[in-house]
Length: 173
Image (cartoon, rainbow, N blue to C red; front, side, top):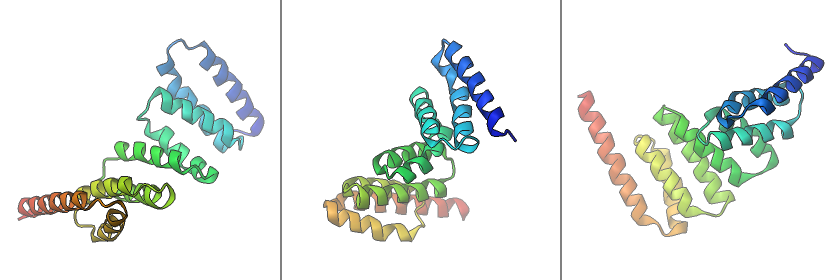
């Protein structure tokens, strides 16, 4: 484990190396490491955030950067940015159930905190298609559909989920 003095030395060394790199894509691993040092060893969330945001700018689909920003945006109460990095996380996760759970969380942020029920309907529709057996998604989906007047989207999602569930049953039969 690095003590604070050694962590400061590591940061200075990584900063010098970062400044010497001409190719911005080569900066990504260094920025991620710097963010980790600032977050875990130096208790500097602002510096960690700056490096994680720069990482996400360099690589918009960077799961590590997106997931590192989640607690920072939560702590700062930055709901819009939180929803955005959670969306990046969805793209980087393979498991459909995990994706559906994240989309459910995004939908709650969109509907309840950001006042965008139509976006919440889209997120929950995607979740339902990914996890058609998760009946608990239907209540919030219908709640946000009522708020947005988006019943057509709900019908499309229900049909798609039913078709997928039926296809899965046929494969397992």
